[in-house]
Length: 472
Image (cartoon, rainbow, N blue to C red; front, side, top):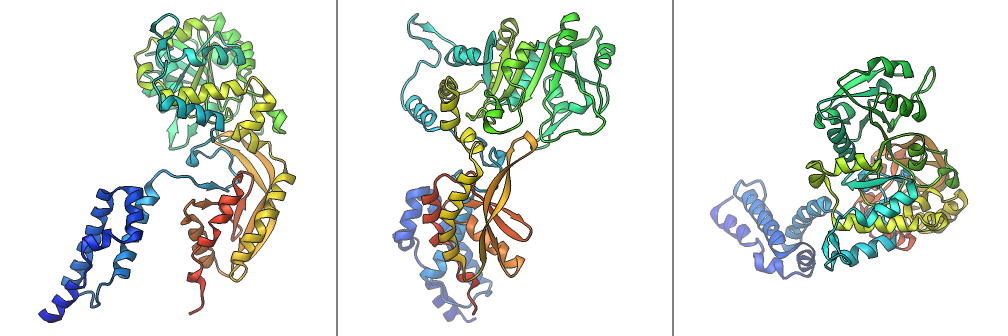
């Protein structure tokens, strides 16, 4: 390429100020800010200039080419931003999607508290410093029957804080069948190490007896722990110890008995047509001294770790310097307090807390949703795919009743090739609000159990890029 032609091509590069004035780029700036978009414009300009210099490219750079490359860079930023998605995977409490959705009343309460000064740590009547736990203590203790409570930023933090407060530099007895690993390769033995405790395994993977615990209690024993077997179930030739027997054993030896419930439902799940799980009130009445569970699983609230139990033990936990590092902020406390108010009326809780409402949806209701959305999806895709309504199974998710499946309905999409199917699924994920389903049996399945905003879901279908499937 001679010098004249090189200069001609180089001069075709659009100026930065001209790119900034384009309506599409102005929209990018309004969403992401001028500084970030400007840096991406300059990156595109630099890359195009380098391509010309290296003689790998021999075409004039017009606005469309520039914008195409800029869109790709902006889409990478959009992909990394925290934003809503449509969860049509069939997993109701999905860890990757932020677990539970807050009810409207909790969102309103968070908004009110976040945009105003509040009495977070101030006693208005006594005009002195207060405690942020006071805003949830009475309601939570009333619901669960606990003497006292506190909350931290998640259940893993709750477990670490309790172990470090009550069994620091001591042995903690745990059944081998409960040495769990949760999401992100986070393992109970590692939690023990973080809490400065020593794990003492008891019994075997499938069978543990009370005598196994009795024989391992020594002077260096600090606590007995029963952990929730998150995400798996041991079946067959098994034996487990109930809470009452472990509570009696711990009291006989003057040891705290801790139960990690994991999900921790505040209502009887039989009301939702699901198998019953141990509830905090029941576990405490069976003799547990301390229990922990998550706020954003079956409770249906914000992410937090809930600690309930004997007042003297809660007082000791609250004096641990770690508590300040792990405490919840005002927005979490506002949301959680709002959730607890709903539990005063079980019917109201099931109706207004999205997690409970979605778990309680009957198959007929979901099928009616499927019929309403089928027409638009089929109209959009009928030239390239076969669309139908099928029966499927939903699951609770996040380790709650891991083998329990719930009848549901889905939109099933099939195509002539898996390559095309993968491309179509990618296009659904590129929508303004990404639509996430699952691939099953060479088909895309959109389980509709968690679809509540049908109009917004349908309104963006016309933005699917289906030109990639046109025959050239």
